[in-house]
Amino acid sequence: MSWITEIARPDIHALAPYQHAAWEPGLVRLHANELPWRSLADGSDAGLNRYPEPHPHALAARLAQFYEVDADAVLPCRGSDEAIDLLTRCYARCGRDAIVITPPTFGMYALCARVQGATIIEVPLRRESSYSVDLPALHKAVTSAVKLVYLCSPNNPTGNLIDRATVLSLAGALAGRALLVIDEAYVEFSGSASLSAELRAHPGLVILRTMSKAHGLAGARCGAVLAHPEIIALLRRVIQPYAVTQLTIEAVARALEPTALEESRQRVAQVISERERMAAALAARISVRHVWPSAANFLLVECADAGAALQRCHAAGLLVRDLRHLPSLGQAVRLSIGTPEHNDRLLEVLP
Ligand SMILES: *Cc1c(COP(=O)(O)O)cnc(C)c1O
Image 1 (cartoon, rainbow, N blue to C red):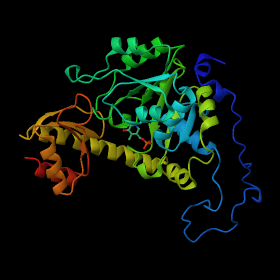
Image 2 (cartoon, rainbow, N blue to C red):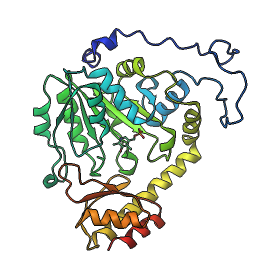
Image 3 (tube, rainbow, N blue to C red):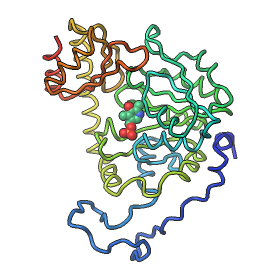
Image 4 (tube, rainbow, N blue to C red):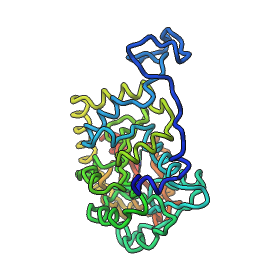
């Protein structure tokens, strides 16, 4: 057992995994108390009257090929949200262990830690340093209680990418102590490569990917953990059997076919070009104080009066995200890049 497993919760090591019904697709299933007929409501290929594969190997293998990692280095899950939940439950003991986050950032890291009863240590990203990671402060924050350090790159909601050198130096410094989790939900929009090629050199690195953004499958709920096989094996003890539904397995398989991937690439390129058009157009608005550069599919926009901007958008039938409650964001809103028509409407509404 190496350190990446040793720092996990001891009760997870001791856990006997759930004994799900055997998976032998060639045989008649009289062992799982399913109905033998398909429902009229069933639009799937394989039949929703049957439980899906408990741990979907073919999906994992396809995701591994796509993300260019080994098959045993992938865990498909119910969105990266579930990945965050699994990591927290496997690594953070209630009342004893801690996670480190860099707010303003994605809310799920802290939420899962709170549910688990783990301590949350914050190392804020500061406006005056363009929301870049404060490495010295981060090093100081990593006490012996810290098991997980989360970095989101590109970061939601600030849009900036964390440079590779920062991540790798941190991965080195955390070796033997805590896992470094890099949430790459938006990496497709960044023009930069995923850090997945670094997994072999850094066993404590965990990368989160999702089908929700660039692949247009937010409604299907599918994400993936890319990590050392020992970490994947541990998370698999805790993930629910049948976590990924049959409809999702089929939708993701289709999304990873060459024509769908080509379409996704074109959509990503379109989003990037609209993002740059919107950033320039918004920066010229008197209601806008500052538009932060973005490597994602959204823009962080500081308004003269965020409340007024939100109201105008809502009155015009456009929902944008209010970020005034987050630390150091002031009068900020987050705008997702829509179709060119949606974006034009937004520009019409903001003076
Ligand atoms: C949208 C988003 C995700 C994706 O979550 P899913 O559960 O995969 O839909 C993950 N991380 C961040 C930072 C996000 O903004």
